[in-house]
Image (tube, rainbow, N blue to C red):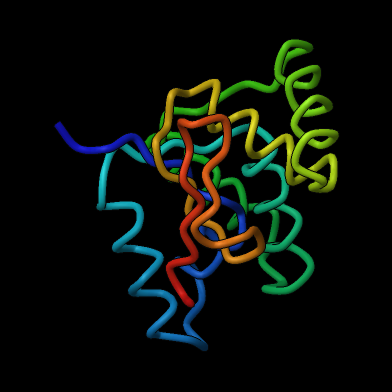
Length: 135
């Protein structure tokens, strides 16, 4: 059975990038490496980047949201997720928003978190391994 993997915003964004084909392919490989999950936070951050950096229209962004929401199971951030994120932020010294990503990945039961921003190789709560696919 393939691993459950969680895709951080930066990895998902590289899947849309035509400027960096190597990173784009690695991002696609991450998504295909197991049962890939995202969260409502990742979806919201992706929308922001697609508008701000890629200058997509809202119509194009709606299409991207539909595509992503059909392709990934989504963790909905709840009060329990927020409480877990606060505990993780305190324990591991990550920012709150990075800890919210960690909490969502743990909540989904993922074994791997693909992220460019967090500490490559770190294990969180003896369950989740952070992997930088670009490093």
